[in-house]
Length: 326
Image 1: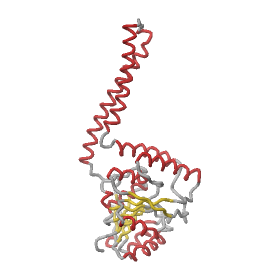
Image 2: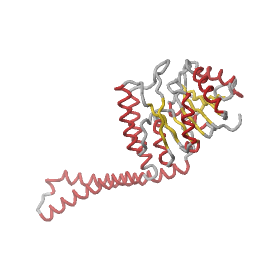
Image 3: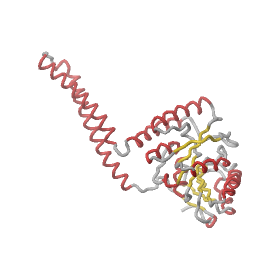
Image 4: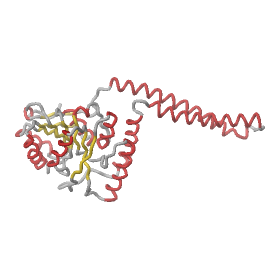
């Protein structure tokens, strides 16, 4: 293939029943565009026949690239390694369970061509359960919009398109894939949202469970730190430290004034005195911790160049029959 224009990144986990149909739909959508493209399937430790089916597809279609994980790491890992192996100018990510309609890909490309750096899908009419998915999702999306300052209505969908240079150095851990727009907001890229269909999963069942809600909450805290304080951790720890130190100092000062001018008996307020000392010590410790984090942050930003999730093998048509372990 010549230089790739479009890279479609699709994390896969036990999707053997739909891979053939998904591939066929993608080919029908991408071929009329008359631009070089690749389909990067990331097998995230599937335990069914997904890998063998992907190999069969790759044998007859040189657009297919297979990235195989050593084990199941999760969707964020799948996207991260898919992005790292993508060579297209425009990178499109989507789910591999046919809940995303490939026929909508040209709509994303059109917006990218208009000058946007990231185009995010918006599941305008969700087919999920009201109490376990829709309501928690709306709350989470509202919080993320407030935290990031990005006016998106659906942070959670994987169906997105990016200019490739926007994905440089993006690290996806945990459930971070849903917060890519927030991570990219630090770079000041142009972001927009377009409505997409939310199709009922045709076969199998979702890997989502209620415990992932707690993971998302913790990741929100991480995102807030990354957006606001990653480059200046001393600002948050130092601010909190100053609050504790100032509170402790005020208590100690008040006790001192009452002791010298009102005859306060210190022994009767020994608990308040100890509290003031502890608050001041805690304030100093937090400020010192923030300073240490500031140094670590600068070292990390200058030296980090590592792969978080190891890849076992990358398959293309030229090496499809090689052994799939290192």
